[in-house]
Amino acid sequence: MHAPSRMQTLIRKTYLFVLAMNSLDKGIPISVAPVKYADDLTNTELLMGSLPGQMQLAINEVDSWAKSYSMAANVKKTKDMVVSCRKEAVNPPPLTLNGENVERVRRFKLLGVIVSDDLSWGPHIEYMLSKVSPRIHYLRLSKRAGLPADVLLQIYKTFIRPVLEYGSPVWGGLPRGLAEELEKVQSPVAGSSVYPTNSYLPWSPGDGMRLYVN
Image (cartoon, rainbow, N blue to C red; front, side, top):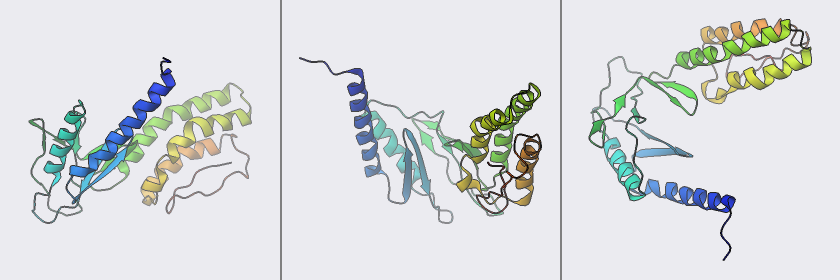
């Protein structure tokens, strides 16, 4: 009898995992909208006034589903965030998982994008700039080392621009102040002979942010 190859085993496990994930929605209350990506799950619900909502029931269902497949939901990685634009604080009852309170946060990283409870993008721009600034420094060092312009351009396209563009359809249309923060990071790059003088093009995922592209 021929034993399955490692690749065949991996494909089967992946297929079974997808089937299992597709069954997760069945017990979740209809008022809760589950959003799945690979092994990540985000549950969203619109709260009406002071009503507690159905999120706790959804969490209980996810926990039961996980146990039925010999898995366990990780309470340390589970976060609760209440999004509200009201002046007064909105504090629905705390959520629990396996007898422990789920941490309520004001911001968290969802698939690489920092989401805040007031839907402002300042924390994400700050995170993005902190990530890209060292790379721009290395780009400047590469220029000082005498690397040709086409190599510098490739470095920018490979290591810097993807960070600045990641998730832009979501957070595009920044207020002027945040857009200017991104401009400050890119302006030195555009003026460092990495680009020819005619290579500046406006690019806007929303209203004002521009990227220097080839």
